[in-house]
Length: 113
Image (cartoon, rainbow, N blue to C red; front, side):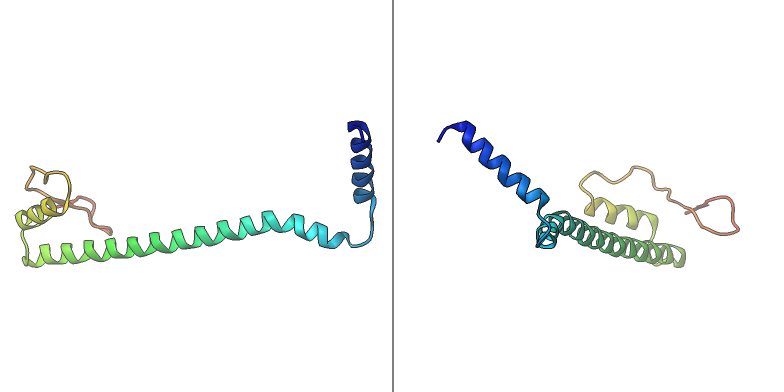
């Protein structure tokens, strides 16, 4: 068979496929399933990323509250805090011994420790 007869046969099969009425729901479902699964996967990934971000934010908030409480009660000093920050960070500790805490609420100017 020549290339022209293959094209003619393929064109006939394609035409019959497009114009067929019986059983098209399975074909449409199979074609629509691919993007549908992609959207479901994206939703799952987004949900997991959002949960991880919320967990990290809660840990950071808890740490900030604990440090600010310890600083205001005199349990630790700013030099202790800077020394601890220097050990945990990959870059050297800041040279300044002064930390400015910004408080949310009626107080307008930052509190210096």
